[in-house]
Every structure is written in C-alpha cells, then in structure tokens.
Image 1: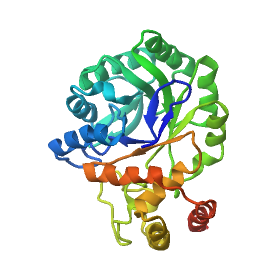
Image 2: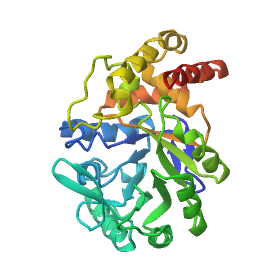
Image 3: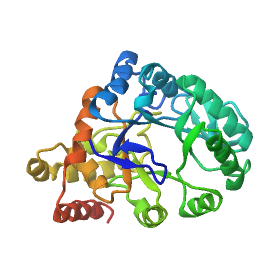
Image 4: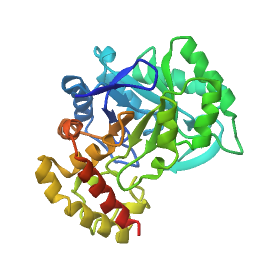
Length: 326
C-alpha cells in the first residue's frame, strides 16, 4: 500500500480508503450480511487500508454503528472520516427522501454539535480524525460558512477532530471555507466517466494544499465490467436515474469498458483496477474511496495502487471516455 498526507494535517492515510455507504445498506443498497461487513472493515487493517469514510446519512446512522462494532480494539489503526450537515432529526432545508424518511440540510452550529455527539456514540469513539460537511447549506435554512467553520474549528481546538473537510462543494465554497481556517480535504464525485472536478476543483485543491478525495470512482459498480448493457436499475436504488445507467448511455459505457481488454492484459489487472489507477494517476494529492462490501472486493481494488500507467495509456483512456460525451 502507498500512503499520503491528508492536506496539511499530518494524518497519513492509504491512497485508497474504504467507503461505507453501501455497507450501511438500507433503501439505497438493500440489506447486507452484518458479519461480512464487520469482517470487511476489520480486514482493512490486515491489508494496509487505514482510511474509512462514513456518514450519519448512510442508512440513518447504521453505517456508523457497524463501524463502531467493527473497530472495537483496533480503533487506533484507522483514520476515520464522518460528516455533518444531513439530518433527519433536526429542522433544515429539504434534501431528499430515503424510503419514507425525509433528510434535511442543516449546517448550523447547533446541528453540527448535535450530529457530532451522536456520531461519536454510534462509532463508540471519543474523536473523529476528519470531520466533513456532507452537503452544503441552502435556503430556506441557509447557514453562512463562517458559522459552520466556527463550529468545526471549536471541535478541532477541543481535540475532538484532527482535520476539517468539505464534500459536494463548488470552488467558491472552498474559497469561502479557506477564509476562516485550514481545509484539508475536499470530497467530490470523480471517475473517468465523470470528470467535472478537473475544471476548477483540482487546480484549486492543488494550489492550496488540499487533498482531493474521489468517491464513486467505479460509477457505482459500472466500471467493474460486471454490469450488462441491458441492465435496468431497480426503482429506489442508488443507481436509478443516474446518467450512466440510462439505457443509451449504458450501452456506450459498456462498449468502452469492453474495449479495455487489451490494457487489462498489458497491466495484468481488472477493469476496476484500470479505472482506479487512472484516477490515482491524475495527481499525488488525490485520494480515493472504494465502496467495497466484501474482503475480496477491497483486496482486488487496492491492487490499483501499484499500477503505473504510461503517459500514453492515461491519455488513451481519457480519449475513449471523452468520445462518449460527444
């Protein structure tokens, strides 16, 4: 495994971390084998993966609860990320409905402090290494970033968190955060099929010593090569309504993935390895989350860390993906 520092925090983490949205299960992902989830998380320590990402919104705290159980006795081996800003217990701006339960956006100081204490309890820990805003505040329950950062900086000064991050932000959001203190991590969706972060966010992060963390690098499983071109996402699932799971786009994406066969043979790797290696090759300030739900999946995905793609092949993969947008 290769390691890197998160921003300027001095926190050393594996370049590939475990994302636990799917492990949380629930309406978006369905039920998971509890023992399998526990085993997957604990196995990370054995293979050098020391970064684990979660959030209260991942099945209403269940993901955090699974982590709390799994990390008993080995908490110090991991850097944990959790988040604030999405709540189902506090007032806020309506976000989405998960099953029959509405979620709200709320980044007020009061809500952040309440969410933080609940997260500590679920994960059975007394600190969180990196604490992030999950989604940004909007009207009609808007909170200025200055107030949000005040709450986060207080938690940091109290030693309850070690670093601050922000997810699902614009470049303007990041600039505003930086007015009030150090931001060490920005988490954004990034895959070879979704490259929006490259325009503004990547240069901004690099210039300010911020780690860019890619989530959904495998496009919710599409870039594993295991999804057929006639696949139909179930109603209510996390994939339903997403661009690359629309029939016309899915056919094009699957055709591109099938054309990677030669590169997979060249690098002796899987399609997923190739997709992950391409992301990591975009800069040494980039970190990546693997949404694995089994020991085998996380073991397979971390093999990408040691793949050194040639400059020509990095460009070739980009060219293939760009053609799909035309």
